[in-house]
Length: 555
Image (cartoon, rainbow, N blue to C red):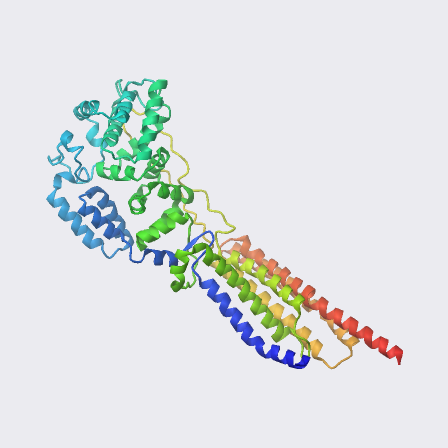
């Protein structure tokens, strides 16, 4: 096959190569997998055919756990769960059949002999458990019951009543020590009734034994403070179900902090802990991402139990950037997340490589020129990798931008307590870490402009190459177009200045990345034009001119 035939065939196949490259890149972009975030499409797929908030709450009602079901009812109503009305009806029926148990949140065989739970209390709503333990008669009853316990852990907790060296509490054996006494007894009841997870039981027992040996509460006092916060906000069943899914004292402290600083989000926080069967993961996620994380958790709860588990397992924010996603590939992404991430990035590189090679053959290569060699293919590959990296940065809003400081990280310190006062909640401003839509649009516009400048420069090179003129004249024409080949820089600087002006005027969100991306794309465009194309074309013209001069001298 002649060189002309090879060139003609390559030029004919160029449009198909461009189209195929664009298709591959778009398919890769549509894959719902990300490195440091999770897409809504993936959460939606994970939540399909799994328990919704209302369905999980219905299971709690069937288990006669009314207190936890109330949190699920409130959460399901807030997210517009279609089954919220049915859950509300089931909760109402259970409350009407067992009205005395509403205050306790449900029936408990370990607590019934002490308080006769079916006896009317005059309370018709869920009641914090500390309300029932603060009266002296109730504490005397519980103390007598726990003193006969055969559990070493319960006995270790009860011994801490005799400790007089405390920090923020008044000692339990002194006047004004009723709050600490009630909390110690509450901890003993939770331990006795096996409402603490096994890891948490071991930690509490170790802290109690250490406190008794040293004669001071020490670290155990922090745990008691946390139980105080939770005991003033949760009824008996709610508290027990939460602590069964809590594996560390630290998590108890985090939930106590969340109950104070995010009280409005407690139905979602509590529901997520029970649905995921891990209070630790929920607390860690919220402590890391703050109110933005609470909003992401709310999104996952609205999609089902599978979505909650996926979000907490990944431990990353939800990517709320607008854009389509290939839902059909979600099953593959859920089963093989790392493999599909590699496939996505490889698709970017392959698609852009095919696109660049097609443009090279279609627009850049002159008529009659030989098809590009290995060196030109290698340069196209390097360029595809660079552009793929830029594409990854543009489509991964959390890759370079760290999450803002969490509003839930600061622990509120409480003064010495002689009465159980409710601490004030510190207001905080949510600062989501997602990249603004205007920023993405600005970057895309600047990139498209520079691609247009790049193609204009390549077309001018091809136009000069195709002219029927001496080589020396072509060299002069190339020198005359130097300003055109540098125009990417001028357009880039104008784009940066224009973006900064729009940001100052408030038309688009302030973001330096959006502004300086124009300059960056301009530099890349000019570098590609002058190094990859202008330099090689001039070199060929110089060599051809030298050959012509040598041939003329020989004649």
